[in-house]
Every structure is written in C-alpha cells, then in structure tokens.
Length: 138
Image 1 (cartoon, rainbow, N blue to C red):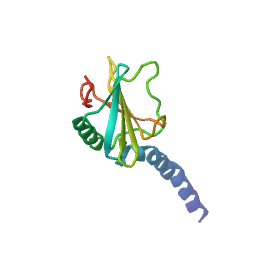
Image 2 (tube, rainbow, N blue to C red; image 1 turned 120 degrees about the horizontal axis):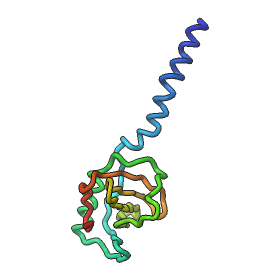
Image 3 (tube, helix red, strand yellow; image 1 turned 45 degrees about the horizontal axis):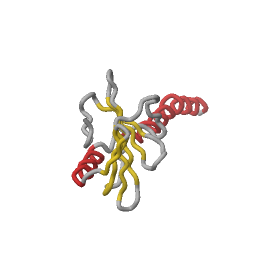
Image 4 (cartoon, rainbow, N blue to C red; image 1 turned 180 degrees about the horizontal axis):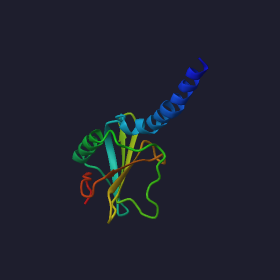
C-alpha cells in the first residue's frame, strides 16, 4: 500500500502540478474577456486629442468584441522609451473604461495594450504587421 501512495505522489508532482501551473497562466489568455460597450471616447495621436465620431465609436466596439481573447495576463509592461502611436480612452454608459494604446514597430509586430481603468494594469496583444485596423490609425 505504501508503494501506491508513492506512485500517487509522484504522479501528482510530475503531471498534476505542472498542468495546474500552465492553466493558471493560460486561462486568462484563452478565456473570452467581457468588455463593456463604449458610448464615448477620445483618441490622442501626435500629442493632439480629439473626440471619436459616432461611427468610430461603433467601429471600436466591433473591434473590441472581435478581439476578446488572446490578451496576455494583467500587469504586462508597455514598451519603454516609445510613445504610443495612438491612445483611445473610451467609457461605457455605466462608467466602465476601455483604454487602448497602440504601438507600431518598424521591424516587428504591432502591439496593443488594454487597460480597464486609467493608470491600471496593461494586458498586451500583438498583431501581425499591417493587420492592426483601429479607427483613426494611419
């Protein structure tokens, strides 16, 4: 009986514990994220800020709903020493926030960071070069 307990302990250490650790980090990326429907927003580009038009707000809602999975874990760090190409600050009718920051790298993927509150933790997602289609981006 003691040998069976040792096998069970080894099985837990070799199989179950690594699976739990992997799912702990993978689940936030795979789980669809429930983000609010925004009704108002602004975009800041090249140190100029303007309100999003009604059509741009609709397009942002479609974009956000299209990309509900694949975001990294909370607490990711945005690119240092590189200002965002555009920052979209949007809010829902209930006062919930969706803040998107977009970076374009000359020799790599485009990256978007998302926050659900001003100054909050980032979750990042990369997009193949040229596939990032946010309203108002060049």
